Image (cartoon, rainbow, N blue to C red):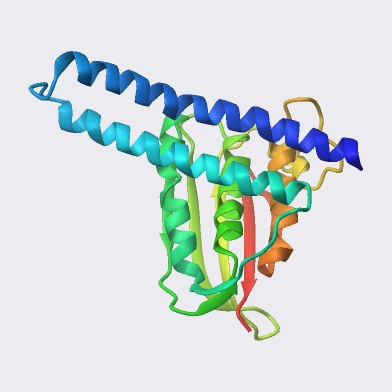
Length: 229
């Protein structure tokens, strides 16, 4: 059990180090240009916005790493608050657009407005959305358009649900792409999909959600259903 935990954290550390390198490098590069060209540079405002975006991404990733590490070793203490779940999901998904663009992918976000408040840990919810997004990033080729759709609807038993559906079309070898979602062991030392599936499965029950992944033709689909009753 201890070795399994270490494996997950080692994989997570590799991913986070790689993810943080991009915004930190971008900040360094933009600041060097700004210092050389000065405010008279016609792209000064654009470069300043780039520094802001990269800094925001770096802070977000660091927060996710901090929470994820504690979740994986079982030391995270939840702090639930009443909050409109749909708003947090929308904000979390929109914040991922910049990271997707850096990987040559497009993220389309359409989350229905829903003022219903849930007692939920917002840090865990944000980490769940990020983990789902990272699962897609580990699987989708460049130029893929990935969509996050959030809807409010009753299920077959009449319970009120908020459902987040992530989907990516034209995934090569879709059946094998979905396998890490239910795997009990990593397929190798760089199996990123495995570590994010682990995070998804660990976080979901903590935020009252049921999660599933499936191959639908050439599309990879992940659904997360939050019970509002």
